[in-house]
Image (cartoon, rainbow over all chains, first blue to last red; front, side):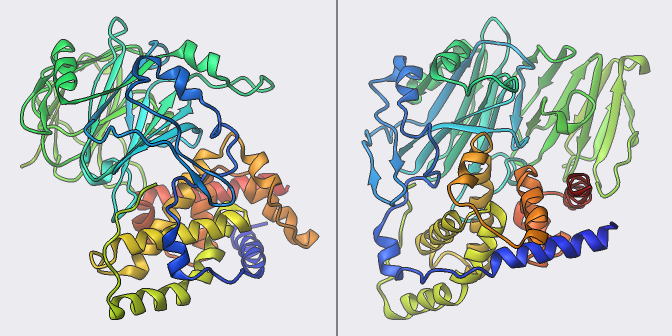
Length: 332
Length: 159
């Protein structure tokens, strides 16, 4: 069967499904009178107080899980923690320990969700390695990278300080996907105890606590929401890579991905003026938008990898190439 | 999920919203059910999309496009959340189809969520790859790759 025939068959199946009768819609007034809390009504985890155990350290700050039953009735115990701006996730370091932004790998599972005012925090279980997060605004549900840096991320995946720091802006929703190792086929579904064995704690911080946490982690704050990252060590991947982030920038992104492809889910997306990679064993980097300059050992790099349909500049950098320093700079 | 709402009590605005709701609701339910594989969830997601539209009404230049974007992203989110419980979710709302079509449909349901979404937009909603890239916030190359690989996966499933 060729693509055209298969596409036709697929289209027929879709249309058959779509053509089934649709119940009369409720009136708009009825619709708007019900405040949806979450859409995942069948999820068996939703009614489980997983986060009570997870958030033992922050139990006073966080209340109950916000849920919505299948019938559309909401039951919520909403504590007022609208003053909180930040969430710090602590992991037992394993796996790659890097941060992925908007790099959904299709293997994510919800644990539970919370809501406070305009903030919504959702934690997910996915593959090992890191935190994946996404900001959803009123106007679009976009991936992280396409919106520049709507949600700031500061991470320090030093195994001795396994904290991942995130902050998100007011009037936006933040989705956090938290990764744990993949389940072996045939094992029972993950449970709270397992999760607790992997996650040391999740704490919501107010601004003072946030600043304190930043300082103790070696990050400096500059400006209300934009922070200068002096240095960022990313360890624990298949190879060790050190990146020095000189400045944050308001546009981007620059993607820096270890491994053989961006689909492996062990990467980082950061917004910065300049990214310097010191002697990694293996790196795969590409840049787009305003980031037009990539130098390898002081020499402007040309694309070393062409991916059909991708206009980005790719540089594949391996230890075998002998390169010692990779610098990606903003064009503006 | 709390939605900030603007006052749509003025007759004109409410009428416009009502009109769009009546005009687009069914088609959006159909699109959602094709993506998520569930009648009930499709209806709920479509309703949620309109609730969000109402919340943003007055600030959205293209309400029709906005509500569709919201719907597709709600579908993606729903799929992502139910990856591990996919069988459970499908089992509660099984869509029965004629045998010759059901095989294809079931194969589609076994695809990862992003494949299902892209294939539905491409081969049900007849969106171009450029349009899909825009609504899903993906590169065009990614969309093309997903379409190609999605068809390949389907072919394997149906072989």
